[in-house]
Image 1 (cartoon, rainbow, N blue to C red):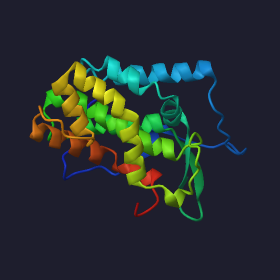
Image 2 (image 1 turned 30 degrees about the vertical axis):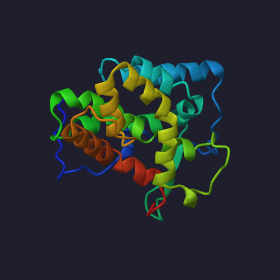
Image 3 (image 1 turned 180 degrees about the vertical axis):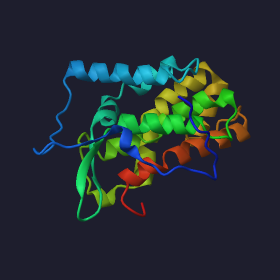
Length: 219
């Protein structure tokens, strides 16, 4: 299937229809996964990340996915209100599907040369993990939705990925520095600033729709 190429000035409207489903008449109740289900979810995320075909990231992926709270948050459905007052309803959005969509979109921006698209996919897929977690049932200090902010999400992402990125910089300095800078989690030198700027731009733009769904207006 041919994908239409996207430019920075021609962003599509975010429509999460591919992974939305009408809820049944009974209230939708999410339950924590069993240990076996959690292992399966971790393997699913690892399979997705490997599929972006960026060499040298296996240890980074394993360290990042050791956080079971974040893994669960990728699979915990989010209920969103859709439609007008007359035809309003709730639909379930699954975070992992939204991040897959963001990764795909990030890789299709015209600003990226082919060799940067895989890393842009990784960065875009990981971008919203903190946001998923702080709005999930795993968070111990359940905040009001109005208290959730992009800043809180970024801080959680920073804490979550800190050790994994440090290990990556030790293993493959240039790749680790580029991904760290591309996630806006520090400047450790040894990378192309123009490449980093392209990855940041693709990562941010591809996740605007997710932030619109997850964040209260103006946050």
